[in-house]
Image 1 (cartoon, rainbow, N blue to C red):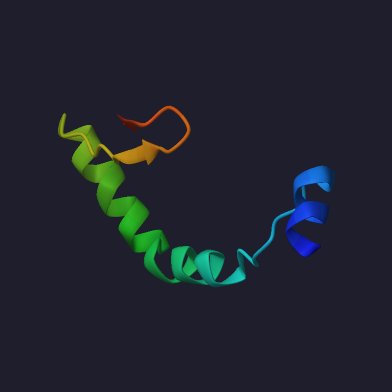
Image 2 (cartoon, one colour; image 1 turned 135 degrees about the horizontal axis):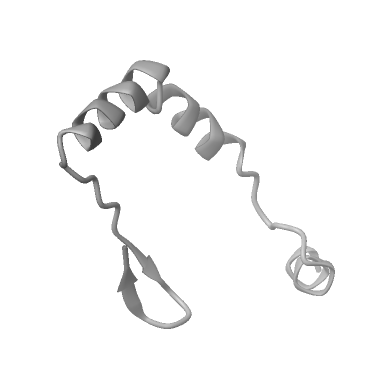
Length: 59
């Protein structure tokens, strides 16, 4: 019933807290600053993922 409730209400089935914690731990101010410095040198950071619904990669 929990899955059906989530589908109808639009709420998530699982907690996103562990993902948020990992992102907060990995994306430090220093890391973001380093990326900005490299961007100023005309280097780019592309992040790839997959759109599961459309079944294709996304940058």
